[in-house]
Length: 126
Length: 207
Image 1 (spheres, rainbow over the protein chains, first blue to last red):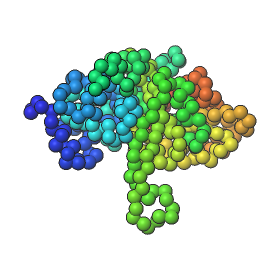
Image 2: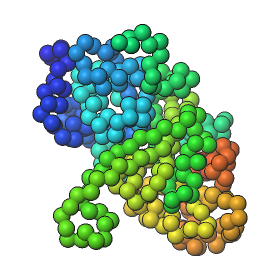
Image 3: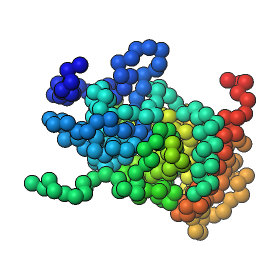
Image 4: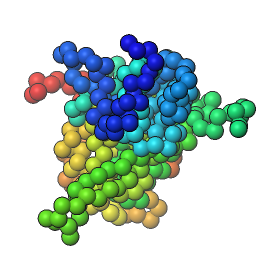
């Protein structure tokens, strides 16, 4: 690992288009490719470092606690796909953790019964 | 230089932070025709002030009749309002609604994909406006419930008549609601969750 976290700079400058949003983390095992959903929760694993893009610094600051990609998009005032690309850089460098990614070709979610029970309980308390 | 700002201007307010242990998130979408109350419903149940996310979509003349046969790209920005409900210290629900035109919104693939389910919000004065949304959900395999937003002065139909007018199968729940009210919108979401629960616990031999 280079450790300087500059890999993204090269990608960015070459104008690499959208496919960066696949966040398999380089794994090629049986698991299906995972993408960042609107509701994927992002949590910073690192403090902002000198020389980072301002957008990356903003994301790391916003994600001191879990925050969805949709909320990041709203607070940063950036389109969803732009945030996906920025996050793919941070994920590649292990600077953020992504909770609840989704398989690239999912149709509807297939929730387990425990989650549905928790949803019903939680909504009833509203 | 303004490096002494005590509070960064952007980001969630302290009371809007999720528990650090939150690890599961689910997505529900509110769909329906223009002006039917989608954004209202999102706002009435959300624990945070609704936020807006957007996406820019490039399409080769989709839905533009007079360009048929012409290779031309159109760019559209689609905005979505969304709110949030924290269920417990592990689980959070996000609710998405479109303030404007539905047809562009369905081009945003990441919205329907992975959704737990949907609420189809209906105005009885313009039933036909909910048909495209229901078609899309069915195509995408996203389970939904139908909520009739009871606008003052709108005709009130028995559920049976609505079901038939909307050509809905028996298993799809139909409920009335007032999208402006927290309790009413909450009950619509509960109807959806019970519907999903029933489907999940039913035998799945036919699959």
